[in-house]
Image (cartoon, rainbow, N blue to C red):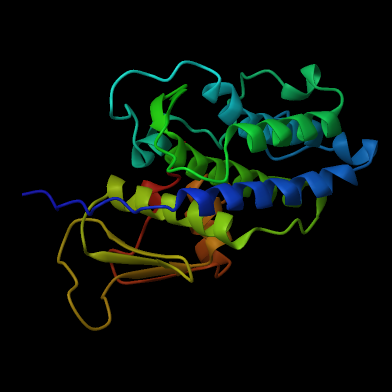
Amino acid sequence: MPPAKKRPRAYDHLRTRTAVLAQYAHVRDAVTALTPQQLARPTRLGDWTVRDLVAHIALGLGSVSRDLALPEPPGPKPATTLLEWPPAVAAVVRDPGAPAPAADHPDLLALYGEVEAAFLADVPASGTGDRLLPTRVGSMRLADYLVTRTVELVVHTDDLNEALGLEIPYDRQALAACTRLLADTLADRAPGGSVEVRVPPFAVVQCIGGPKHTRGTPPNVVETSPLTWIRLATGRTEWARALEEAEVSASGERADLAALLPLLR
């Protein structure tokens, strides 16, 4: 009998909205100070420059207003739930064949202002977030789609920091939502209770079939920081490298996640 999957984690819609806006503001403030030379620098996303990455971040948030402008999909239930989003679209891993987004948006500061103004107008600071959006991976609840925006924003903030040697801050709630969604994705993809994955202070999940831990110290434990976990889950770093550099601790014969990572391929 396969292991039972746990009830999906609930996210507060308004707290997520606040987190999305806060992380977007951190990126916007950094973009305001970038020089033409910095914008022309390469990133770890294939042939994208920093300018392309910056434009992509704004367009990722702009997808909320774009989808809200479309007719609401029929039916009371979404076609895609939050835990179905990561395997449905590698939204934070750039498609090498995708066109560079900066070409159509030469004025980045204007783009950032337009996207933020539209988001504030289209996603009010009230409501339940139950409105369905026709996203490219199927209809999703607005509240769930905003959680996916924390993944986009946090992961690409890390990409910017890596490309430019900056220290753009991470909103705590945005970092928490991103970490938890990716941890829950692992537990959903490899259900079980033989390995405990700890990402303090935001997430603890059990995964991988085998002898279930019930009390005391688990025999198989993986522990890492939120940013290292996010880099592992999105392919920004490799399991073996993280172990070698002591960015991950793994104890127990089953505490090897190499075959399951990255989660977003």
